[in-house]
Image 1 (cartoon, helix red, strand yellow):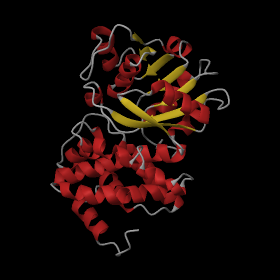
Image 2 (cartoon, helix red, strand yellow):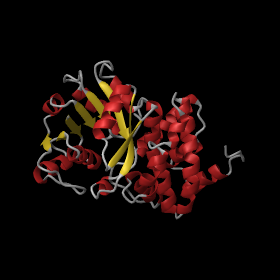
Image 3 (cartoon, helix red, strand yellow):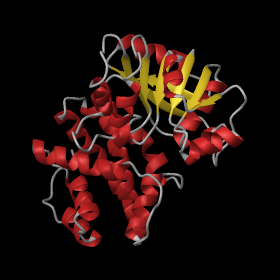
Image 4 (cartoon, one colour):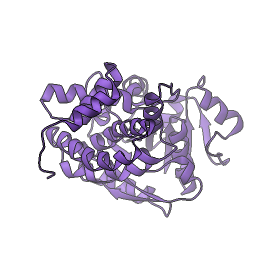
Length: 320
């Protein structure tokens, strides 16, 4: 299968490496001025992995799109609309677009697949998402994990799972595109919460966070038209170890440094996703106490301990 992986950051480069490893004809595409692309083009390696000679590296977007049966996109989710504006200049009919990032468009509250739908005919261009736990640092060491691929089109997700499955990544077929996308996006939000607890020295409280957050996200998924049980699948709860505890997680590290008053220089998608989910919750009157307090801490300079006290002083209620 001819696959172009657009975006060559740590996850995009890992996807290209993985798909080549399992036998596909892979191109890794990036912006010619981006430092990560320049390094891959020149040295064929980055801080996480090395590319074999079989992976083509290109900054020619038209060529990258035209050669591909499947276009995998792994970029900052808040730039997806801008990126799709460029990609949609070329013929996308008969192709499958696979989104490998986790987030919600802050300006519109749309899921990422909905952003793509604004640019393509769903009957002619199929859309799927690929999410779940795992870090490049582990995959390149041969440490296996499980992930999920979801789509509104049954044949598309079944075909992708069959083509992408291996001993390194066991894929499952998703059954709820709304829940899969919202669960994956909000996992990054909860990752920031976990990092804040680490930064405060409250690491043991992450147990309570892990138990209550999926319940909150389940309510959000249900309110948005999905299956609330998806929050307990690979897209959200299944990804917790990789985000709430891993030293590799950008979102967890962002939260930890935030609590310590330090700056985190790398991308943490959960920051703008927090803002997006808060706006949705306010608009649709969805009770989301954890997300609400995180929003106030990140965007309204609320005191962390005071916000935590608000969560603990809420009315007593049944667990289920």
